[in-house]
Image 1 (cartoon, rainbow, N blue to C red):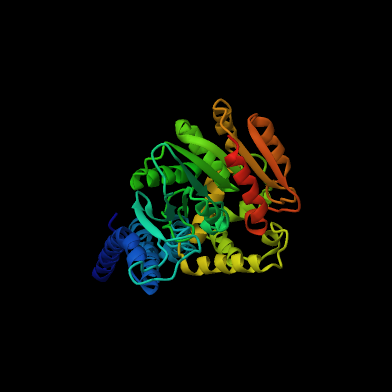
Image 2: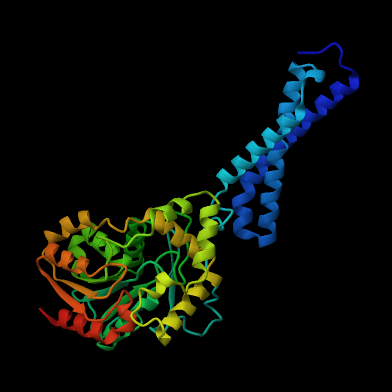
Length: 409
């Protein structure tokens, strides 16, 4: 391996290059180990600096190839320029692949800034805001206990859908509270004011969130009435499958779980591309107001629509884990996974209300009739002219249908 024609200065050069290599490798290990903590705890400038330092350290591995090649081949026969380019390209590819999601989304558990001790403004118009620490983060919820609640009474639990948090129930929840019923509404992980854990956002994560919240609050209700809108319909059906003895009634509103209008497959393929997919997702979703969203409203020019878009945009700006959670949900949440739960629930013969808008563009009204066929004990209520946002646009019709269903013994 030693070339007799080499001079002392060449041996010194190769020794120094080897030391640079070892130093770079030490830097890579050190920065990589500390990177999650830097991203979570330090200001934005520190995060960018950490990424640049890691990239530079990886790039410095080029001397490794130079040292070995110089030792094996004669200096005159070796062109080191292509080697440096090859190592640089490999380093860039490795860097992009390893940190493909972190380049677009922050890493770790993320929280929406809120000082509960000093803030007196209510986050919603549904009641007193409460927070509790669960296994995957802090959860925002509102709980109202009826005056005559007991272990034999029933608790109404409201589960929202994909993007709009508990405000989806802004009219339904207060109406039942006004009737002195016990009610619980929450923000799912990554939505509203709940923390966004850096885990796959699938149906079992949200079911475990609800179950753990009930356990942590030590609520002694014997039975639950579960309300689920859109994605929330899949969640409450899965909850019922896992805890059948605790469920009294189900209310499915424009529920997913069967056929859903899917994004084009080419769009999903693009979103799957490392770095490019998350960046594109953030760019498109931060706007909020677009053709596909307006298509889910019967009256997209209404004040309620403008209020919801403003609420959505505020969440995008204030919650660092919101868009990351939506992105994760698209890839990990099976929106057509209700069939297994349906088989279990069919055997329970519990009362079920199927509430739907006949103009729904996201979960077509044909799904309402299919659910009605699956659940022989179900009650079907179709609201004329209502779209996917019927709970916000036509709350009175929804409330009337729900109260009639609850009062039907």
